[in-house]
Image (cartoon, rainbow, N blue to C red):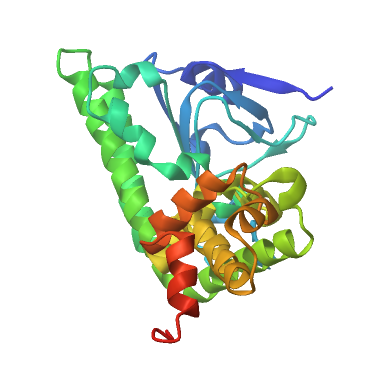
Length: 305
């Protein structure tokens, strides 16, 4: 049975690495100060940002290749997730940072709702943020300021300032992720190609007959990545969501089958729709016309387009 460390509060992880926290809801850990630390497989009840040091010796893989950044990585976790490496009695020297915060610190703040928009909390380890040296310096600077604030005497403004620093960290993380999506054009195009190949294979093998229309989750699992990361890559590359990309792919198949002579019901069931009305609504939403109108226009000699 796996040895799992429950991190219900930031102090649970801090105690594991040998640190006492001045704040009950937020922890900043400088791994240089507490290393060596034992490995741990953590069940998180908190949010966490783990900024790996250059000497961490952590090799991350993306798809079929390795990341091409070497200045450090940022891994983010959210409540309900499992991460880390199971304790085997070994110790490891780390030089990075960890910031952990309980959801309660966000209560009554704008970040309480906004945090749902940071999709990178649901990325997998192999989708971590790889920063340049300059980007890493920005993050470390904010973390150090947060660390100092946690050591100040408690007053009426402290939690607001703490949440401000956390918000700043997350905004910069989002900016740097956006940069990574832009600069990794070749990798993103490869993902898009494999995404489309996955859809082709799904319908070629007629999985839709038993399992219905393919979902973003199913495609992401086939591509060995998280659905949020797949969605973000598709959005950055094509300007549309992964769900809409799937619908557009399905509608193109539908057009081919309609023109070949299949009726609306036959097309609907052959593509995995539960009923023809659902297919007709989706078709009109995606194309602006009903399947019947599309066929009439395509087959009318006066309208060869």
